[in-house]
Image: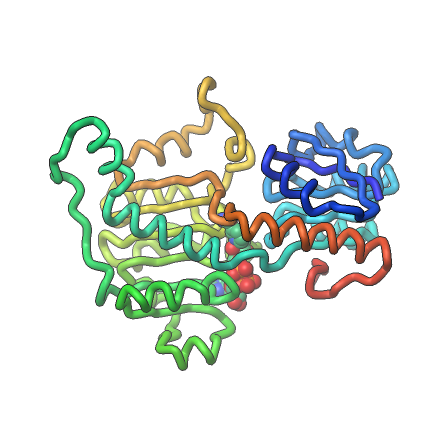
Length: 332
Ligand code: NAD
């Protein structure tokens, strides 16, 4: 099985090669994202292996089908970057890694909360610079504060014991409430009530046509003044211009994001010697109360190992016509 592996980083190459062992799979690594421009690289392969910022538009999928490719192996859980209607029409098999380490993402969401609150990123630089003052580093106790978790699936539910450990009161919103979490003391409420009561809001919702820009001006308006918003899910959940307006009006007191709507032009690459053209992103990073990480929430040793293992097993299942339905993406 010859697989064109797109958006390959040095770490991907090392981890996947370590897991390949004697499997009859040949991986050819390409640094490039898969796109309409780079799709010819897939010619001659039996399948493609892709990540979050590879864009599998209808045009790309049609081209892949022309090359005789019918396997898309995603190295991630989300599949909002694949035109699933077209994939289905072309009878392509789309496989993903539904849960590689929900804990990794939940822990990163907490890292964003703690950093924004206690400003350890600023303290680190200050102390190294010989500045031992505390002015500007004032935080707040998490204990007895209210956190609102939106989406209590695999990742959202991992946040519960961590935040309970801090002594926080936990509100949640999900169209499918989880009884076990309710028994553990999580209070499911409607979105408006969560917006009105939460001191910290953390998003763990997939990006779909109905969740796109769910955090818009209207939603932000309903939140507490000075609220902290954390997004480790997908950038498209936020209407970024409305978020910038809320930061300017001080409605939003803190913003921690690991994802950004236009991240495919920026993340996972070194642009430090270039002029960044994205004015919205550049405005975001000028705020002292905004912390951006570049889609690294999943990036733990355990998660990478699970991703490699499941992706290779998915490819073998495709070869052996023994696909696990839980790993297959199908249109609703
Ligand atoms: P999941 O499918 O297990 O859970 C999603 C939950 O969201 C479900 O319980 C669902 O009922 C709920 N939901 C759906 N629409 C909703 C809405 N409009 N409002 C409230 N709840 C809604 O998914 P997961 O594994 O917990 O992952 C969540 C998201 O995290 C993924 O879709 C992915 O985009 C993102 N993610 C990010 C990283 C990263 O590195 N930053 C890594 C993995 C996943």
